[in-house]
Length: 227
Image (cartoon, rainbow, N blue to C red):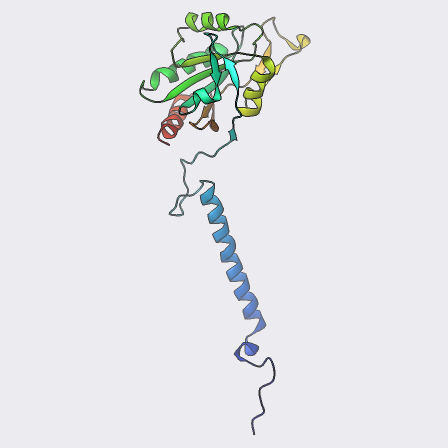
């Protein structure tokens, strides 16, 4: 006569424990893969189809509000730049190093961008005590780099450096007198172009002394202009 089933007796009681462990490993692995794909999709590293999104531009940093002024002694603010893509670099007018080359390359970028594209060009000085609006204006005119959409920015040093270093992620270090190779060897600073989107977010850094800097910067500018 058959005995009554005991508590816990069922079909599951006959499943091989190793098989159950294997199932957990399989489902756990699938779960991790799905989580990884979700994270990559949200951060813009894969497309909705699951393939890598080579043209994704992550947000590197978000600028805090600032108020500085340009070569015309007019205010330059984050709010005033909203709604436009902008390309930024770092220079100073007494520079004996790469500043002239960076300005020339920024000029080439400005000339290559159509007038209908909502783009501004912004050069920050590391030497605000010397680089007054009038000095910056003379510098721009001397180099033929005085487009109406190109701002040369100066202002109180603490505010200026906070925007350049904390916000835009440039490097800008003043050299000690004993470290200077000549009287104008004043700063160590970045030679990169930073591209900022219409919401005031840093999206790309491109080395300005690379041979293909122009194509890289313009590709980012054109992409962000469509956002």
